[in-house]
Length: 241
Image (cartoon, rainbow, N blue to C red; front, side):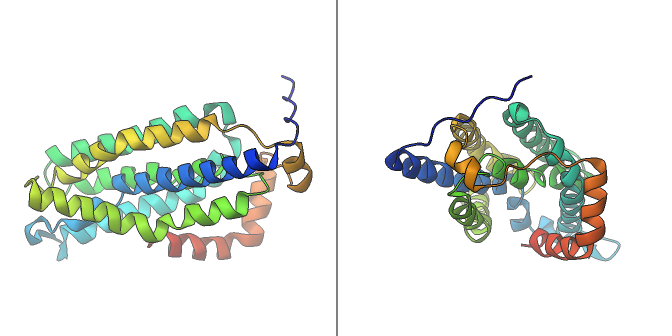
């Protein structure tokens, strides 16, 4: 298959408009992802304990482990992902994570730990997948910075929505995570569609930015050998945010 030629350089006004659109869509898409990850932590689950540890803490630990492991597997997964399949892949990952929250609502504790592990594993790929839409552009650094603001904003906002469901609508603690996802699923699909609809980097973007080629198995081994310790520390810190 022949590679599609990059479009001619965009006019300044169009380039600025695309940067604003991409930054907004990436920020809002990843903020929406938090609705499938964070809300359950608002629940106390009546102080239920297993092995001397509260159920809420066990759920958080399970999700964090799944999320962290996905970051390491994501080095291979994202590198080999065909750009033409990103939208469907993102939808599939979100769907699985949401189904986990549905099953979580109907199975007894402590088996919800398994569901939160899978939920975290699925969601861990989405940062790299969403960022792949905006990389390789002259405005990528700005777009990435805007997207990173979601770390500060999205967790608190989605937990506030979860708390509102618990107090205002008296949704049970077990159904609240799934219901929060229900509120955000359509906005998330829309923002992913906007990212999917962005035009590709133009000729000037490609000249000024290094095009990222998929890493081979050998490249990944070399990368992990060189940067594995630092990558692990960054991943663990980010996972706990």
